Image (tube, rainbow, N blue to C red; front, side, top):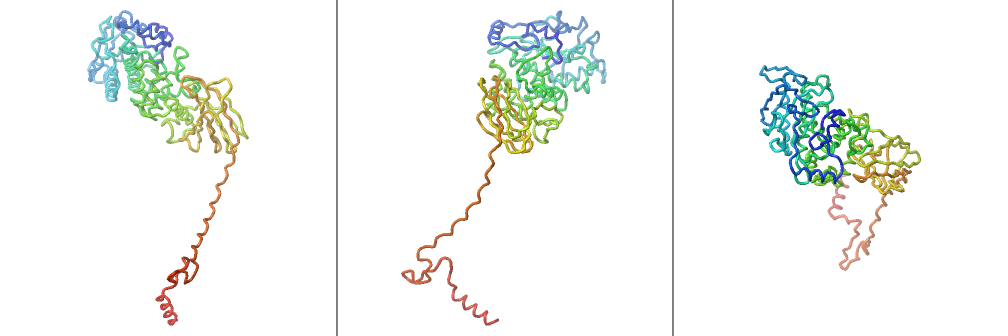
Length: 497
């Protein structure tokens, strides 16, 4: 839950519940932890405490605090030592500009969260340990420190307690004090990115403090975009997803600092664009049941009316990911699609037919571009030894907004000069393998021209000129005898010739 965390930071996560780290896997371990946490567990690790987190302490310098206009935050800084805040003070009120900027942005973030109905953070009056002299009054505390380039912000938990089926924690966060050399376009943008991201981690800890990093970092990075679409940090981090699209969304970290956890924000952004941001909020709410984020997403998507739930949503997401970079189509997919990288695709020539045997991880995708000389059929076939056969979406450049789903045992058709195949597992927790059997499609028979309708048969006796009826007045339905006045008129006109 820090950005750009160093290896030393991960080493400090042994006491996971009180740090900014995700919980380890395993239901039995989680149950044991909750049982041990019936009482509040706290640790004094603020910058003014005797043993600060990761040794990011104020080293005896006297901390100052500014209470934000909204009243929900205190921003702490020091004026001397290695953690001294930037001294710029445009209004000469004794409060550094960066302190005021942090506080005002924090007020804006909190106002949006409250308006949208997210849970409030757990106050430090409930779960906290105070070893120094800061905190403990219910306001959320933000501390400016010098990370020395190893990170730019970190949410740190003060205290935790088991409540119901999960664990919740109170928190504070640390933020870079000057952003010198960090590459942000401006200090203001850096502040808006960091405050929205780190404070959202504290909000997550009010729902469930045991969530894995792909979910916490993914949703916190998504919230950066949700709060401030003008920033570019989300796009930079989400773009890391495309070269790793064959990796399971929930695969977990692969090293001290794994950018893929932040790249998972792309999936939550898709959910926001496709189904509304409320789905993300409801998924976080559902995590309070303690059965993991995949089950929570399944329930939230089903409640939002997504037929097929998580797999259906992930399939749409995987199909959108074809349409980026040079493949982007205006008005289809992500608004920033042209600026994103492209997923790797296998290049295939359909020829007169081929078999593509493909394996795919759960919540991941495999891609192929198929060049066509004629209309072809595609059947998804099972492979021996595999119990889970994947599904495939056919994405046509001619109709990019309407991918065609072909499930195991079904047949679809490939038309045009080329199509993209997007293969995903049918199960959110199981890898899959199958054969994409591409064959010449049967020639479509032209629709026969409709046969002309037969002339109606004349009614019996209708052809008689007269005398056919009892009264002698029957006439043919095809011809009518001219009235006498017409004959008379013809005679008159003939005389005028």
